[in-house]
Amino acid sequence: MSTASRPAPSKAPSKAPSQAPSKAVPRPTPDTRPFWDGTAAGELRVQRCRACARHFFYPRPACPHCGSGDVAWVAVSGRATLHSYVINHRPAPGFEDEAPYVIAIVELEEGVRMMSNIVGVPADPEHLPLDLPLRAVFEPRGDVHLPLFTPAEAR
Ligand SMILES: [Zn+2]
Image (cartoon, rainbow, N blue to C red; front, side, top):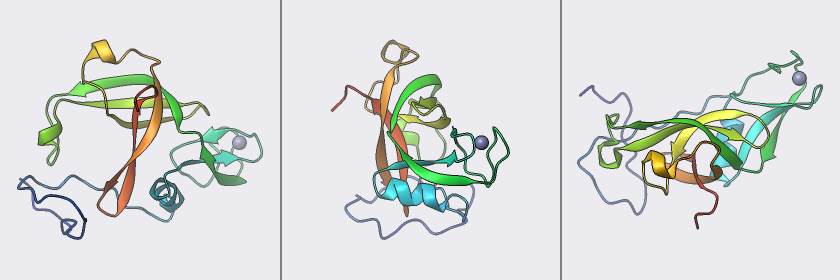
């Protein structure tokens, strides 16, 4: 119901027109740009501290574990497990066609957690055991590619 504050992505190719409101699209910032460059290349990238060798996410200029500013972006495997989730039956604007859908916290095998959606599986607890092995997939949306997760054994 609110007025969109940015134009709808109109140059998205091969997408059928829809009357539904556009889905929200993240806007890269200087701090998050390397993450979005990675997803556009089909790769999940997070930061890793050179001082203590631990990965972390969300993006920030210093290591949350040891405080070092000696951090670098690295590609990670995209393998993860299901840490926690909710099944959302009250979709955000633009997501009406997808409800119910799964909003999850996944834990990457590198030890960091991120919020995402689980796709390619029914939004039903029977199909979503905790610690379910997952892998990252990338969905183009607007000017970015969103990392989503799907069961590792799915195609
Ligand atoms: Zn560190």
